[in-house]
Image (cartoon, rainbow, N blue to C red; front, side, top):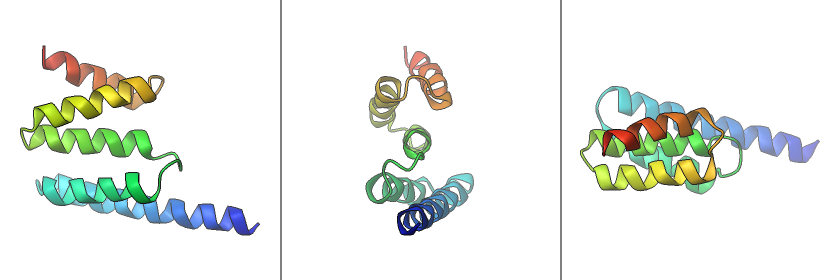
Length: 98
């Protein structure tokens, strides 16, 4: 029970960071969004949010015209999360670069 509670708490914190990142991203503050998505990836890995946070991170870099950084992350999604919805979206973005 304690481990489940701890996991649920960490998931809520990760979701909060994603939400804040999405808030910043929707307003065009991509630098702030990037920092929140990185928090999710660094502090809350393995809770089921990695592919989503990576995609949003890459999309933020894309919007900042940092296409090389975005492409590297899109490729990581394709390698590590190939069966996810994010992989399909990443594949479309990578094809736009060619």
